Amino acid sequence: MAEKVSKAGIKREKGFLYYLDKQGDVSKAKMVRGKKKGGKPVKVTKLGIKRAEGYLYFIDKQGDVSRAKMARGRKKAKKKKVVKKTVKKVVKKAVKKVAKKKVVKKKKK
Image (cartoon, rainbow, N blue to C red; front, side):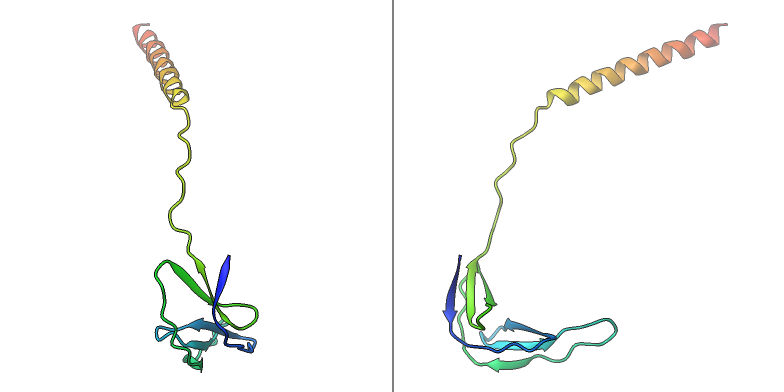
C-alpha cells in the first residue's frame, strides 16, 4: 500500500513527533502533554524530497520516508426507499384530523 520514497534510517526518541516539513526534510518537535508546552521543531535529516500531489508522506516504522495514496471521495450510498416516509406523513395527517374532530365535539356540548 505504501511505497518507500527515501531511506533515512531515523532512530525515534520517545515524546517527539517526526514529520516531513515544507522543505522536504525530516523534522521533529516535542509533543505537548497537559500544561507543558511543546518545543520548536528541529531538523533531523536533510533530504529535500519533492512532494507529489495526492499522496500522504510519513516516516515509517523503519525510520524511512514513505508515501501512500490519499483516499479522496467516497462512493455514494444507495438511496433508501422514500415510500416509508410518505406513509408516515399520511398517518400523521390522519391522526391530526381525528384529534381536531374530538376537540370540535367538545366545544358543541
